[in-house]
Length: 322
Image 1 (cartoon, rainbow, N blue to C red):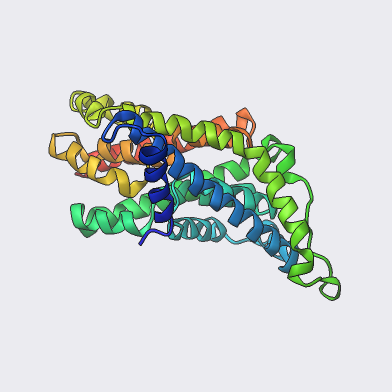
Image 2: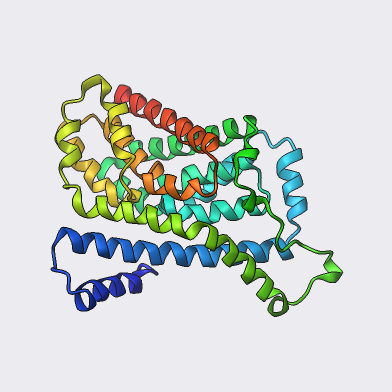
């Protein structure tokens, strides 16, 4: 069962029993979505910021960072980050707290972005649905190209040296790891760890609320067949158009795969449909609004630009192969 299922029950109770909003209405869909996702992301934010602060205190982060920044890993660091991203069942907005945690721990920017790109694109639920709908062949290629996008994006962003475009509060020193003999018990250091975690949350929370609010409006008020209608007739320009149309959406891979199936059944090329899906789950507008509090415009636009180009390229490859 979904660990966040109680939040879904709470959202339904609040919407129908307290707010008395009409069932099966656009407004009720938006309100439920907003309550559920806000609570889910806030919970992840609290949990992950506390965990990452604790890790920074007790683990030899300096040694780990030294390995990632000075050893010649020949791309293996990006690969590990994408695999970790594939193992975390987060949507694009839910990936942000862990992304911030990586930066706080001074993990290289490109490695953190490799995770950030892959995490919403690939998860075990999406893979299971892919296998059931499209078979092993297409599923394997989708996973392969999802990892490739993450690795290339991370590599390019590392080479561009854009750390200066991360907001200063992310780089501020909070709880740092002392020498082994000076480390305090967890209960003693916890107040300091918790203070650090909530300082980060305070900085980002308004943007989370705005981002999820936009996602909730789209979820409730954009008709289900809106995009199907337009993508059927796009022809050669279908892949970039699908990518651009999908950006305002806010969903996860497992939620949009049935939509992709319906697009393909209605005649939309598979690469165009997959580009639509990858952009929806990996380049959402709500994610951009949340990231804007963490990243300055040059880095945010570069990140979205690199991933957009990668998604379009993969869309054309799938159209060519199938």
